[in-house]
Image (cartoon, rainbow, N blue to C red; front, side):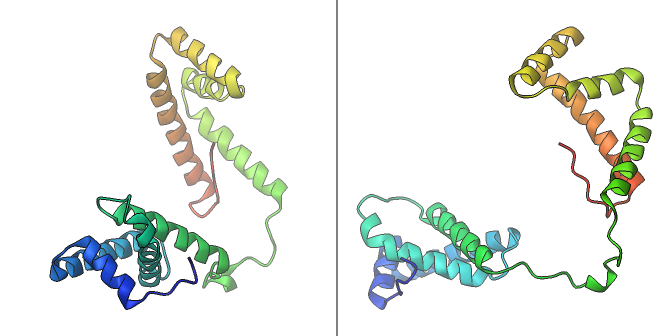
Length: 194
């Protein structure tokens, strides 16, 4: 289907499928294309016009087999095709290099230095929490898989709150710690809490 080329006959079939009125069909076509471009731009697509056109063309190429069974708005179907086209292009094209390559430090930071810095900041941020909150946060992230689920249920029962309330409480604590860590380490420091 990727090698298929748009013909006047297939385009006319698509337009007549969109609407019996040629002008209304043209407006629907333009609306579909415009919406695709907007969504692709929002998703960071580098060439949204080209991806939108390719997606519409692929849909038109499949239309003879779809026309018997597909009804309704074609936009969701074409949007999925556009996402796939974008993924194909992203795989083929390497990501562009950042403009500020001159600012990269000559000596890479040692991982031991990074680990020590993170641990120091984490200790500092955890020490700012009340002991009960700190213990709750530390306990919440214990265990794995089913043990984790069972433990969190028991913890919620012990606190006399619903599991969702426990999640919200821990989320707020974690957000506070993350903000503290970002301030301590600097905004440009790569930080990911799981």
